[in-house]
Amino acid sequence: MSAVRAEVKQIQAQGEGEAEDRSLQGYSPCDPEDFGFDAWVYIGIEGEEGSDLFDLVVCSPSWLARELSSGRSLARFTDEEELGSVVLGPEVWYMPRWDRTGFEEALRPLCSRCSPAPGWSSVASRLGRYLAWEYDYKYDEYVDAHPGQFRLPRGWAGRSWKQQQWSTVPA
Image (cartoon, rainbow, N blue to C red; front, side, top):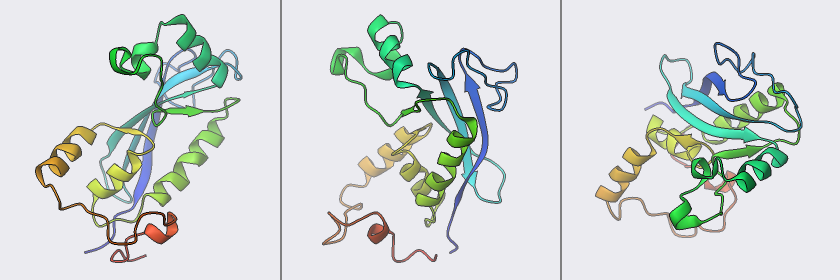
């Protein structure tokens, strides 16, 4: 079995300043220090067709503060009934100033960090720690249906990311 590696296939941007084709290249905020948009990142297996959708909000801290204080977009960040005004961060990436190249360059090492793995679902679930994965509910259902099968080996807790790489996966 060969190891699976992730690669970014396409990125789209939706929000104020979006391009007609929603391309990230065409995204241009009015104020690069006060911006926010939905990013749809299509990531798939390196060298193969197809991808899964991972989405997030990319914004400046000032934009997020304004959105939360206005109450307009609070529902998109949190379940108001359960969490109140608490925002959970995996689907929100902060940048003090919009920089397309910087954003794109942050995705490459993320794909590398989550790869290689024995299969796509492992890679995608790892990416899901940082980006909202369109199929995370299916992965959760599978894990729930197989209790006890996904236990960490003894001594696993407290080890660094590099030390936690699966020893059975070829480099």
